[in-house]
Image 1 (tube, rainbow, N blue to C red):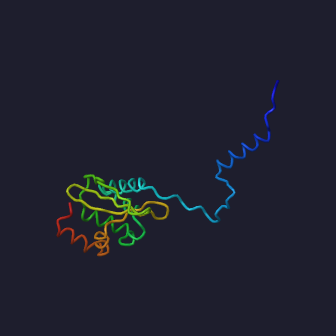
Image 2: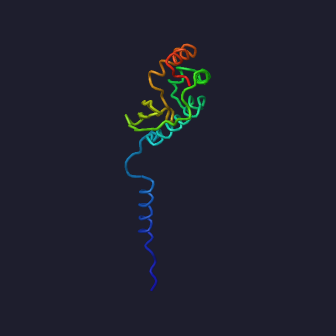
Image 3: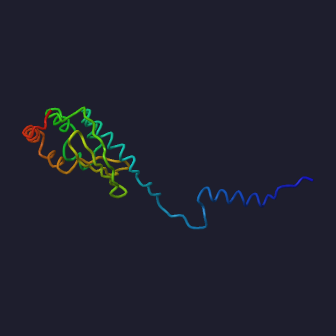
Length: 160
């Protein structure tokens, strides 16, 4: 004897599966756009590695493009390239990321060393992307202008 499937039970089961799969429920849906997912700090590490690789290899114009909007206001891209061309920093030595610390969902601190020099920078999730922020001392120096900063770095023996 052949049994016909219970169509009502099959329909109820299908509706339950669709409801579970699409997140539908009897609760009203929130109105407005869906908030973006929280940024991933692993992506921040990737941007920091890219920034440090560019700096270690002399890719100053490209490194500048990874900065936050506020940091880019401290020095123009062409001036950043000119500064590092006239007073070349230590290149060819890799930056090593020692530690990554999430300060909040959209800010990560990166502790690093580059040869004998150690430092810390932050990355901020801005405009849907992680952006690099030079340290406050470097930003203050950039605001001096290229010529005074080249003189300051030469006097400190920081040009290679």
